[in-house]
Image (spheres, rainbow, N blue to C red):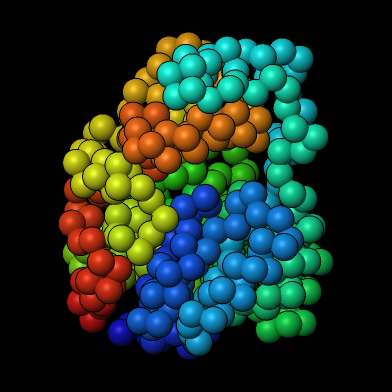
Amino acid sequence: MTNASIRFTDLLGIRHPIVLGPFGGLSSVELTATVSELGGLGSYGLYGYDADRIRETGAAIRAATDGPFALNLWLPMATDAAPEPGAFERAVASARPFFDELGVPAPESPPQRFLPTFEEQWAAVLEVRPAVASFVFGVPPAHVVESARERGIRLVGTATTVEEAVALQDGGVDAIVATGIEAGGHRVAFLREPEQALVGSMSLIPQVVDAVEVPVIAAGGIADRRGVAAALALGAAGLQVGTAFLRTRQSATTAAHRDAIARTSAEDTVLTRVMSGRLARGAANRAVRELTAAGGTAPFPMQNWITGRFRAEAARVGRGDLQGLWMGQSGRLAVREDAGEVFAELVAGIR
């Protein structure tokens, strides 16, 4: 391993500089524990989890592995303000054909709250006391950094640009994920609109490495030993891998989702807001195409809550055309169905 990778593994107490991407809504205890048991850093996305569920999840992971693991939180953004009047009705109208087709009642009104508060979630994370807390969509507040330090919890932030990486370092994180445009799921930009932060990994990683002193974790398009070797050559200290692990049987994806990862070409993925209200990369399936044509997309988190009502049923009945099929541009390189085999392939790229 490089000196940077040794520094990174020592920092997090892991054997290999490989981090599991935290899947908000698609994480599983089994996959998280598997990666940690193999010597990497297993991660679990807590999007939408209330305090009780966070504590239960932390206990389940700890029962499954003695290795370090990370819990991931979404930071609130100023753009999450109340939507304009009529946004809910327009978004439901656009999605109504899917509700009708699946036999699911369309929601008539929004809930009292779409998500638990960040403070509620953070208090529960502190109780769990994972080795690492990771964040997307911003810089963790000073009180979060301080309370994590008091408990020996390492902090990891996620950047889509050099300026975001510098802001995260100044905010006190211990390591930074530099996530290129190839990555699947949400574009987690926070200093500018995500459409203005579309930087590829080949350009982003070395520029972030040059701009900060903390370890840099490369993310976006890495699915096999070739991507690992390339990222390390660009100066990264570690790798974060999502789609390749998402395809494995240990993940919480459906069979339709795993099949879509295997057969979707890079050019058939798309950046879209229609599923969640925030820009994210996934397969351009029927739901994405028809919601785009219909218009009426509400802001996050309202849009995510509305589409989540029919997406859950689509997942239950195996309708991949109506699910949110998050994946990166290297889906066709995700050829392994077992997490252990994926991990071994990634380790083979470390020199």
